[in-house]
Amino acid sequence: MDIFSEKTILTVGRLTALLRGVLEENFEHLWVQGEVSNLSYPSSGHCYFTLKDSDAQLRCVMFKSAAKNLKFRLTDGMSLIVRGRISVYDQRGEYQLICEYVEPDGVGALQTAFVQMKEKLAGEGLFAEAHKISLPRFPRKIGVITSPTGAAIHDILNVLKRRFASLEVLLYPVRVQGEGSALEIARAIDEMNRLAEVDVVIVGRGGGSLEDLWAFNEEVVARAVYRSKIPVISAVGHETDWTICDFVADLRAPTPSAAAELVIASAAELRNQVEALSRRLQRSVENLLVSHFKQVQSLRRAIHDPRTMLGHLAQRTDDLSGRLDMGLRVAVSSRREHFMRLHDALLHNEPKGRVEALRQRVELLSVRSEGLLRQRLELLRQRFCDNTARLEVLSPLKTLARGYVIASQSDGTVVTEAGLLETGELLLLRFYQGQALCRVESLDACKT
Image 1 (tube, rainbow, N blue to C red):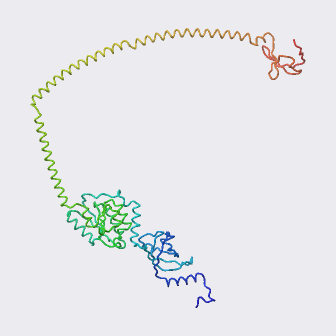
Image 2: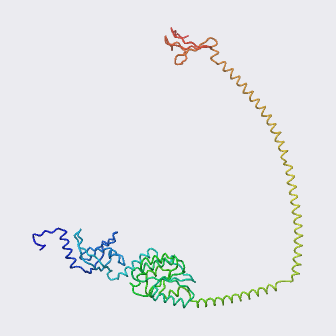
Image 3: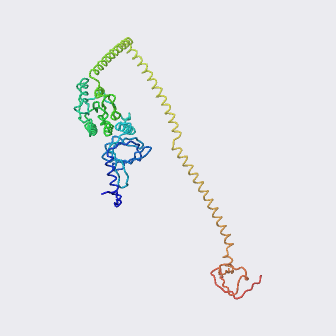
């Protein structure tokens, strides 16, 4: 059927599916170069971004299955070379590049991942010198984490046997390259710390390409080395090979053989050091004995006849004894005189005499106070009597007793003039004894 005939009507979904088929059949394996923009890492694990140049832009998606294999992290502005296939996203009707492999333009993916990991861990302080642990001078047991069949373990054992044959070595066999090798190395470091049987740990392998050494650039290995409480020597590859493990480790050895040389001095070197120290000690002891002998000789010459010295000391003792006796007599006499002065002063200031004098003074003051009090009371009594007499003379009751009355209106106002009253008004008359209520019947307001 001709899908483009005039009688054929396509749905949007059908047309989009046809276009997707055409694009996927004709653009199945592509290599595209461009600059990253609009980068997004959602929680699904997929990666979305846009590749652009000066002429156009292309939407890209890298699904989780491919994104998890990336050795480095994409960033906006990064120039990439991408391998993938063209498809159409039906829901938006847009074509997009489904990315299967990504590498930085001009720099290898592993090298970019190495630089990114180094910058990240350096920023977190994993390379700080303050965190590094000093190696023990005389370790009793060495731990080695490497492949049991590689050249590294043989080089380490040969060097240790030659330098210090009696040193114990504990091997923890691991894979040193390939999928899952980084996790094995990290677990081995943690297990060495858990067992706590060794004094120092050598982690490493022989030389190889960047891909071969990549397990020692993994973050999981770096963090295991960082949290190790046992000093770690990194011995990965050759002298020119550098890994993330080298930067985190407490000490970096250029080769596994060099790590074995660094971990402990050879028995011959130690023996020579001991012999040299023994000779220095012997010379020091001999010089010290000679010096003490000369000092004893000098003291012997300075010592006189003990009998003469004892005589002088006896004479000195007698002299000091006499001076002591005289000093005691003077001191006792001085103390006796001082005591007598204090005794006389105490008798002079005897409390009994002072108490008697104070008692007599108190009695005198008591008599005087009693007399003054009587005079004062008599004066106040006489004054009271005088004031009482004056009050009786001025008392209104005396006037009422002579037949006078006090008239007051209903509001209590005392009436002094008849003109202030009205006929029929009630008056209260107060007598010397008792009172009466009266009514005004008539008024005579004439003045007298």
